[in-house]
Image 1 (spheres, rainbow, N blue to C red):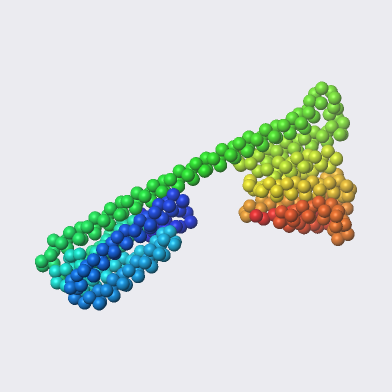
Image 2: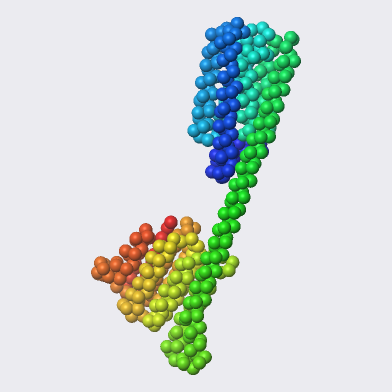
Length: 395
């Protein structure tokens, strides 16, 4: 993971709950660690003011450091993570403070406890190592080490072992923080991946059960319609040569085709074509020949939308039977890229004037009110060449 991947664990939308919880835990832990690194500075500041070249200046620098740390962690705790800009600003400020505090220390004190900048410097290195990539962590740690060495450079001749020991601590803590942070965040991502896989498996199981239930309902429907027709013909109770029986067979065949188009073993369940197929089959019992066409109907339509569509189409076809003066109609239903649907019911009948239809009539009372109740839109185009009722719904 390089430095530019910092956005991944810092609350981006794709971050899962387990990884986000790990990040929040690290933020709280770092806040407590920074308190533990800053508070001990009070001991040399108030117990040994002679350890500094300019005591008032040192107090001012310490106040600035406290104000920055409060701002940094207050922002992080409210947000739940650190942004890249805040982390880089923290590293840069701590490097500058390491130089300034080291230079403010009296001779021989820059590598000792009087140099209270070392604790926050180590904290900044740990923070960067937890959330940045390896190369960025190394660059930030190197900058912090350089700041500390510049501030303590006057004491190298006599206290270089102490300086090197502090540098070693700084590098070791940064590397340890990198290892811990990567492991925690990696475990969080693994937990989120496992959760997503389990959710996908459960969704697949639910789809499979829904498909099975729908198939069972179809088989029952076929038993009550198509098979009963075939059985009547085979036993001689129905004469296949009669027009009424032939129309019944044609209607049953349309139902079978519609059901097969609605549910395919290789696709998810799409309930609307099934319901419309049943509506068409019911209306065809009145002698109306209905041609159906279905394409790309969304799988996850809300149940109330499916019910409203079925009722509106049924009423539109009933109007054809009652008023159009024809024995043929077309039902066309398609989906769109937004997950919405568009349904058209057309005929080549005598037509009517929608403005002359009573408010409680079939169009207004049973079609428009039903469809607008689910936030759908309705348009009617009718003249002497026929009528088209178009239903549209967008999620």
